Image (tube, rainbow, N blue to C red):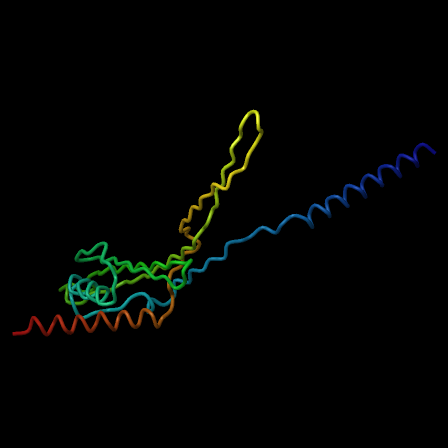
Length: 187
């Protein structure tokens, strides 16, 4: 009789342990796996070939950015960076940063490759209210309507623009400035 009672206790404990493992497994959140968003396929979206030197291509890109209201933060013969701010709503702010890298593509330097990346940062207004209370020993605590509010723009998102149309328009504008620059240099 003692043997069968021990078997039942062991079986009961095993059932309880398996049940708990099942419950814990069901409650656990699934492990999030990172699925790479990079395809490293076509380079058509972010780069174009130009019949100009790298310095000429970057100068045309600088002019293209300036023509659209971008503030140039860096301009070299092989790199141009520009920023522009937008405020689509009273409590949100967007900032676009465009980076152009120009690299020679031919031995004689007359053909270059322009690489462009546009990054959009999104900011939202974060409000925090502060209030004050005053404590007087004999009277106790007294809350007075002293209040202040601190507002701050907080970055809530960032993404690389991947729309082909956006880059097509930019590269078309760069080509226009290359043509204009070439016509100025002809005698």
